[in-house]
Image (cartoon, rainbow, N blue to C red):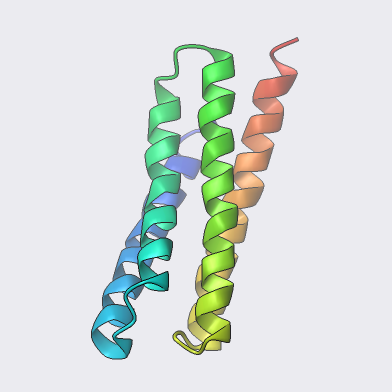
Length: 118
């Protein structure tokens, strides 16, 4: 795995998502879409943590691939929250950028792990 950088970044992102979720629920009274960003945004880091103790290289790749899918899903929900005007463009841009960075790091980690399978 890409050291602790990926683990730390995914944890920081999860904290941002939790904070944003709390404000959307309390200020906007939106409970459905915000729950989706909470679920997918916190799952990324949890899956990365699971991958730390993967049973094999293939298991590691599998768990990291699921984390990548969760990150991609999170981007969808963030876009939907922005376009439905539940979050401001600036808030969206910050979360979106952080999530895109996680996507890039996950892709790189998966590619590296796959190259070592051969």
